[in-house]
Amino acid sequence: MSKLSPLLKQATPVLADHGEGAYLYDTSGGRHLDFTAGIGVTSTGHCHPKVVAAAQEQVGKLVHGQYTTVMHKPLLDLTERLGDVLPSALDSVFFANSGSEAIESALRLSRHATGRPNIVVFQGSFHGRTVAAASLTTSGTRFSAGFSPLMGGVHMSPFPFAYHYGWSEEEATKFALRELDYLFATACAPEDTAAFFIEPVLGEGGYVPANSEFLAGLRERADKYGILIVGDEVQTGFGRTGKFWGHQHFGVEPDILVTAKGLASGFPLSAMAAPAELMAKAWPGSQGGTYGGNAVACAAALATMDVIEEEKLVDNAATMGQRLKDGVKQIAAAPNSGIGDVRGLGLMVGAEFTTADGQPDTAKAKAAHQLAAEKGLLLLTCGAWMNTVRMIPPLVITAEQIDAGLEIWSDVVTTVNKG
Image (cartoon, rainbow, N blue to C red; front, side):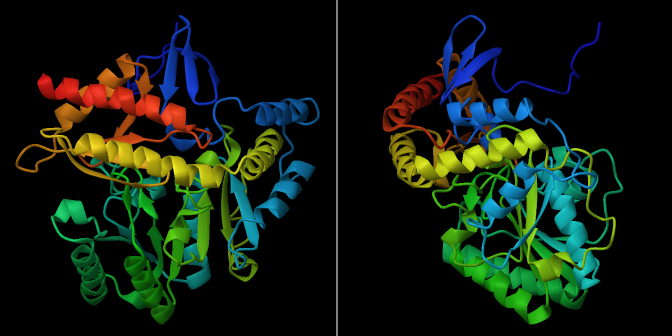
């Protein structure tokens, strides 16, 4: 009898039977308010009727048509439809299955297009678990430890994480840009640098938003030295931050954009978008895959886009995200809450637990996370020390559900601080 790998640790004790909207139901009939959304994947909620219907219809017509062997309409329709939401310059799309695959495709394209070896990433970033993607990941050593050597040519520069440094955002931003220039002067010549890989909001790194000044600084340096900006929108894309793309908060468009997670409401699908002229610089045979652009996943993605548009879910993410963040901040402001910082954009909200002297309080974050699950609110943790509790409700979340989650969270914070 085989078993799952012992390394696959469950974040919650739930054995899910079915889901509906913002709720998961376990095999005993218990209902759980899901503020994980499959790590930001079920953007339209669990089993949205339109997404389910689209997938069911497609399953009866064509499950798989390998896209370098035959073409199929869901793939062509999705490619065209993405043009309605992508930055206008990014008019060529490649599909894969996961965020890691799409990131590696962007890495390969960046090196092919520029003829340069080096990549600059920013401290706290998460770009995936495959070897190249893990080599770009600095949100925690657990993603890259134990299988060195990693891919060469990767250099790390600071992210403007103001709370971590104990500075204002302005101070942290000036420091981050100054250190990037120092990196160029000491270890990574800009003329050897193919791309910056940047998340508009650090995901696994602690739900830390970038800012306009920082991204403008990256754009200035990218344009000066012929460096590409790769926007990792795997978690921030498709309305999650209250705008369709996370970079839209900051007024700087990437040269290459990578998306996944909420793209197909739970079906495995990712995409990389770039200008056609840039995409054409990829070497022959460098793009492909057996399952990329799967017909059922593409049908689900098309339905997801319909639902996002028809139900105004980007606006809902902005409104409900503000309601959630305001509520979490109010709870954090109570005396001895143990929460040192609340941050995020849209429906990406993080509450960082720290001790009285400002040190990471992983134990309290873990206790709060576990107690919330016992009380029917499913959450996740993140950050280098896993001391930030993150809330990622589906984009269909209602005010009543936000308030219900906040009520549980308030009780959880009070309880763990009494203990």
